[in-house]
Length: 421
Image 1 (cartoon, rainbow, N blue to C red):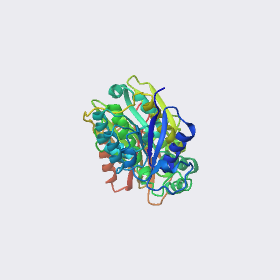
Image 2: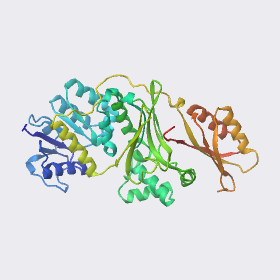
Image 3: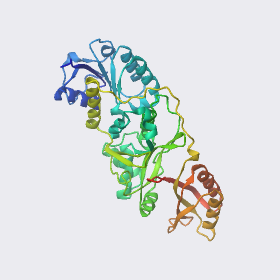
Image 4: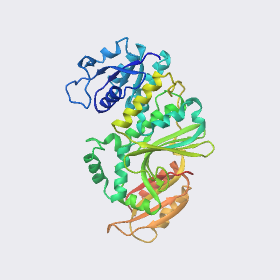
């Protein structure tokens, strides 16, 4: 039997405690926990370890020549980036759950790992669908194998939208419920504004292109503006509204974005409820597959960390971008898809004809129109869906509609995503 890999866990919070407990109690073969680092060593935790294994100084782990693997669980950019970089320079492999660091400093981390011949396990940064990472073991060719990836990657947002759909609650009411149940932070901005989803999409994009270059900025739209009315109207049309990360092949480039979307209620992602994450992939032959998993939590994250540690200990390859090739993100303005639109207009004759005329001039074909009962004495909602249209044409058309004197509020646009869009 080869000698067990000696491990140091840096970060003894909720996730760190879960990892330490698993390593101590399960006695995973090939793994030997020898040091735990945290600036607060007095707080009570669900696992007890000998005092001699504890230290408040990360240097005690990084500089220890006996330690083979550093597990970084402190989050954020610094000092995590410094700890990981120094550890690799000292000949150690890395396991991390730090999606923010990998999304924004992955170029630094992975280029250093490639230069030094070190391994970086990061399943835990992608807990909701970490099995997806192993779809990309052959990362260099993966970009040619997938036409598109649509993914729900934030459990908080999915819980909020599921609650709004099930109970008819407003966004604010559903958010307060999520906070009360511990599924949303006191400051939920990263979750509800799409930032967390975007970080995971950046990591995924690095994998499928096999490039560790920093992903250029792309469109990010959260769920703050999703209303119970839109959820109701979408439901009447057979759709559910979800926050979706999108990666699509468009010619020789890749279109990327994060935004609310209408998904068929019977589809894998459209039927996903609560805090679950899911990913739908379509390959070059049009075959669609999907993955579903819990979006967060101590146990799923701990399990992801342990799996990476076992792979390193047993010498199995880890999926990791290794190329410095530039990333070619195409303009989303040329992407084609269907759209859901809600207009707030005066209830008078000729209004719909004027909107249709604008759409005709912008090469947009209308699939369906529903005029709803007035919800205000000032305007009436008109719900419309379109056939396939270019994003630029749609944005230009909406600007023209919103300039009409009969338009009493900004047009609400939500993209429609399905197997053929």
